[in-house]
Structure formats: C-alpha cells, structure tokens
Image 1: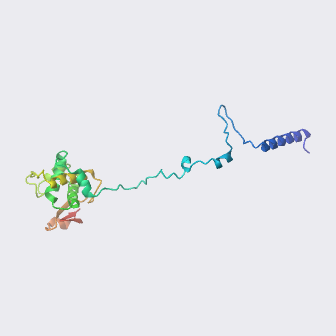
Image 2: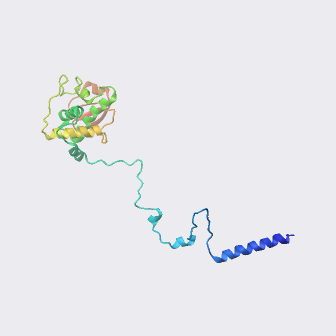
Image 3: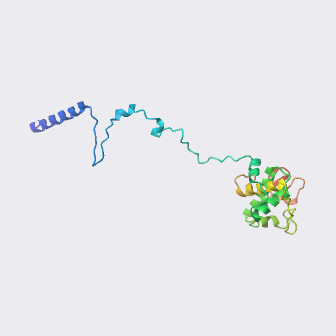
Length: 210
C-alpha cells in the first residue's frame, strides 16, 4: 500500500510535468553565463539554409586523389620552353653536348633517351658520378677524343634544343627509359657487347640495353 505522503508527492510532480508540456516551450539548458538556445529544433526545418552553408555536398570542394598523375605538356612544347643558347653550368653543358653530337638528328624522344643514359650512368655507381666525367670517359662516346669534346654550333637551333633536352632529363619528371638502362648503340652496327646485355628499347636509330 502506497504511503499517503509519497502518493501526494507523485501527484504534484505529474501535474507540474503536464503543465510544462502544455505550454509548448522547448526544454532549455543553462550553464554559467552561456545563453540558452532560443530556437526550437523544429524551426530548423523551415530555416532555408543553403546546402553549401551547411558544408554538405559542396561542389566547390574537390578531393585530390593521392595517386593523381601530373599531366605533362607535349615534349616539343616542353623543349621549346627550356631551350636556351647558354647552359646552366658545366654539367648541363656536357649533357647537352652528348645530346647534340650523339642524337641531334633524332626525334626529341630519341634525344631525351640518350640524355637519360648519361644520367643513368652517373647515378648507377658503376660509372663516374658527374655527368662530365661520364661523357669524357675513354672509349664510351664516339665524339669524345682523348677526353676532349668538340665545340657545338651554339648559334644553331639544334644546340638550343639540346639544352632544352638536357634540362628536361635533369628534372626527371618525364622518362623515356628505365633507370637501369646504361648502354645504347646505333641500329646500323652490331657490337659484340650487345649480345651479353638485355635489349630494352628501340627509339629512332638507337637500340638501348640494360
């Protein structure tokens, strides 16, 4: 049997809660000096906020995939942008000279491949570490005689293109060959050392090996 005092307390509490529900005011919470939220939850349904104001499905925010690949310009446009009459230092001069004397009659792709062989050798640990030392190494490049290189026609368009090719090769963003391709020869000769290596590419008049 319920105690009369407890029954009276329960009746008072139920009456108070019912009166609050009838009033229609939202429940409010206050803490210290923080102002209470005056807007009831159902008012947001008709607030008319734009989707972008809420930060949802905003078309202006586009995620960039981690594996996105940069789109390179056409090679001829990149060569034209990098072409110059004067090389930027001795290393670029040596690399451009190798391109000029070994491949200036080749396509731009073929010229870049020759430059990459020089770069690959310098990075391989099997050849000298500098580009000039690689190019001047005895019995490696036919245009070099006793460590001396002839002087290119530096007023020619072929020389300007060779510098452009050298700069693209040094930047490394565009590759024609794998990093382990260290040898090549003209396709009209058949050196004995070619049989001991693995051919990887044919570009223009040159055959490349690793």
